[in-house]
Length: 151
Image (cartoon, rainbow, N blue to C red):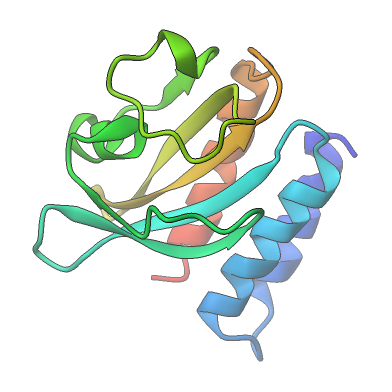
């Protein structure tokens, strides 16, 4: 499925009135993981109140030990501080990287803003080297903009 074909599916999930927010986010994770070949783990992390840490939200993929990530640590922790997209073509080339699985080769993390405040992020791991393009960034920014409407 192309990103253009996935956009209305994302909107349909998020605009459904009778589904809890957590369930909508879980459906988004599965939609992306199941329909984009190189998305091997898809999850959301959210800021833990006023603490400078992220807590794992809904995700699709292998279970992870990284349920709490301090700001500044790993790719997700760096995005929490920088407020910038972070595309990692090869995780082995990153000094500040928290390995989730030995199969993960690359990662993309896009911050999630609500009213200009970074409240979390979508995190995608891939078992393929350097699969992410600007099209992934734009699509995931769209996903996060839609998700932001739930908050």
